[in-house]
Amino acid sequence: MSSTSTTTPAAHPRLPSQADGAPGARGPRRPRLYVLDGLRLLAALAVVLYHYTGQDRELAVWGDKAAHFMPRLHALTMYGWAGVEFFFLISGFVVCMSCWGRSLGDFATSRITRLFPAYWFAVLATAAALFAVRPPWAARITAESYPNVIANLTMAQEGIGAVHVDGVYWTLWVELRFYFLFGLLLIGGLTYRKVVAFCAGWTILSVYLAHTDVPLLDTLFFPRYSSYFVAGVALFLVHRFGPTLINLGLVGVSWALSVWHLRTIVAEINWLPLSYDRTFALITVFYLVMLAVALGWFNRIQWKWLTTAGALTYPLYLIHEYPGFILIHHFRRSMGPYALVASVVAVMLVGAWLVHRLIERPLAPRLKRGIERGLVDLRKH
Image (cartoon, rainbow, N blue to C red; front, top):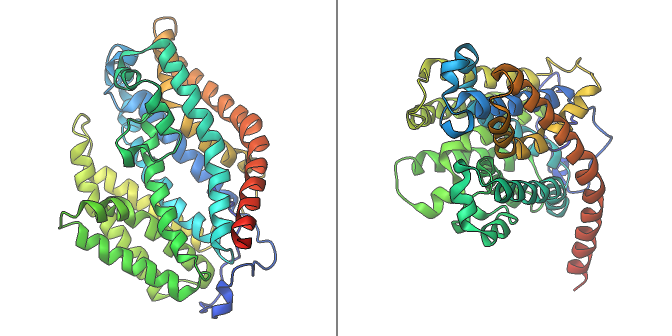
């Protein structure tokens, strides 16, 4: 979602001076971490396959449980929801990396231009498809009519009580709150000390909120998922400044909180026979993979096609669920289930590429120029 370029990790840990965080002091262009593009696409595909074959909740899509006619695939893909947690972990790393040496205005501009063009298209296209077909699994959405669609265009629909046009949008509300919190940290520029204090403070507050009922703070700091973002940020500190005890300690505490909250998440997905032990192992693997990224173990991966893979991730995530359900429901009796899933995934990948080429690439630069002009006006008056 953000650029995946960074520095080679230092051979020996070093602490930055205050100047390291000065806005605008970006230094030379950093080599791209191609592996992050590949990991994001894998996480997106895991979520896609979970929705198509793993969740077994939208029975009207297939007309039966996927566990009955794709048992082996279902046994794997029912854990695909954890791809969202992997997204959050990667997001913490990438956002911290892309913000170093940049101002709050730079950050806000990059996030808006990156997120909204594809999102606006996805909301309108998905809503049009749902209102045209009116599938039974989307009855609540179609009952809300167009004011709900308009509310979704803000990306803050969950905050105002509107219904998501597509179920996957809930994660964007989580991401927006992370961007808000991290954006506050950018005031005056990032420094190592500020980022460590941010991670430690958010962790302590999340532990406190886990045992209290303060809805406003719970909404703002979302303790169930905060540990993944904190870990991602701390892993970037490992990458940039080395595996110090403080940096690794933040990662370790975040991992412990993640696997603790995982108990609740697994229990809530009570329509699937999930194993906590397997989910625990999966989340632990996510942490270990990102630690390997932070330590530079994948720096030799320089496959250029991964850049395209990374570009497909966000639009694929946005468009795959309800449009994919419509296709599966329509063709479920004319194709075998495995061929149908493969075909729909392929269609969604092509659709994601088209959204990237025809929506994101033309609109993002124009939106960026408009925002930058607005920021200039704000500074003048």
